[in-house]
Length: 537
Image (cartoon, rainbow, N blue to C red):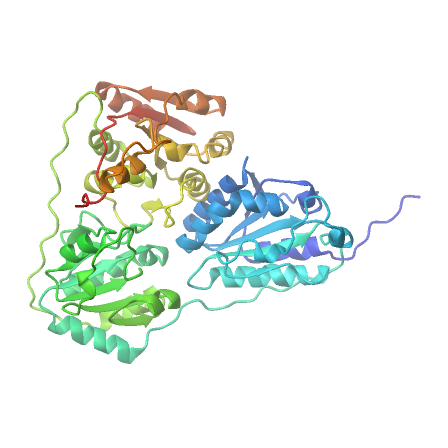
């Protein structure tokens, strides 16, 4: 007579019940021994997305969470796996992406012996780049810890959370846990908003500086209505990781530099600056920020109390973006201010050999489907991209807010999983691509609608640029000769081609963008060094 199976609910049963209640349909992971009890007898209604390295796993979950606006669920392997993933955990923190990251831990009974593959002080490892981190005291506490991690991750400002789970906890008894509803919108203070409206009403030349928080909040259309009613010029905040205003709109003024001097010069003609959904301001190099000298009134609307606290001058209004913009639209009076003139688009760049990167970017912009999504990690070419690849607005553009490489290729895979009816284009430098090249395998296996365009200038272009700006010479480690991206992509199952001449580009882009599945186009470009900032001296 065979033994009867236990009908007692387990930690694993309670966890899967929570995932279903939270609408989590995919788990991103790279398995190890401490995760096997969680992975055994995997349910048919939840898709397990395998990544070949933990940084790629977190990047895919990040892109998927941004595309779906629900937390990504990640399962990593103990301390070593979490360590491999930490770069993209940091990026998720800077992106304000909601993630619930779990990692295995050795069995509780052998933890005092410093067991193989155990994590010492596991909850401390990912701090300070997670909003909540815990290793539950008892097995039966695991479902509640995962629930709390989800609620915290989803509460603005969103971000990653972490739960360490001993290997033997999954099969322990635990009752089901009912998912709760928690509101996430926070309304602005009416008095503070009246002060902002009064400043806008009396301003002669106001500027609105839009940041990624607007696109994250699905509020680009509201932002356009505010800008049009206020008749204000619209600038993009430095290093904005999303597109929060249509870049062909007649009020669009351009992109602010991350240099204090250049940013101050761009905003010098405005008597009022209102920053929405961004810090005030994200700088990258030293310099005097004249914008803070007192001649310009500054207001900020942000859902991040920390960003409000570090703002050096002006008034900050802490609220989620949608209710704040809705109140602005309601309160703003009509104005007789002249409509500001936007930026003038540059002429189309000419073809040449070696192939200019500006020609590539313009051609790609023309070839992409109208509803395509661009995911970018080519920092040395970002100024040229901003000139020749205007984005349409809501959910059209993604990049990493951290400046750390290795996010965009796996994130593009996650976005393609989250938006399977849309062509996703990953525009990436040759140096950046090598940080998480393993993500191509996942995309190819799932035949995702993804086209990867590798800008190959045989080196770290951003570092070349900075060596010019900082006037330092003979810097080692900037050249990357001999990487064959076509063979790498083909080895992982992708369609791939190389472009060396401008005459080959249009055909290669057409083929790659129409591919049924994942394609890669390696474009050999001119190695001339673009300048990201003005030279010193």
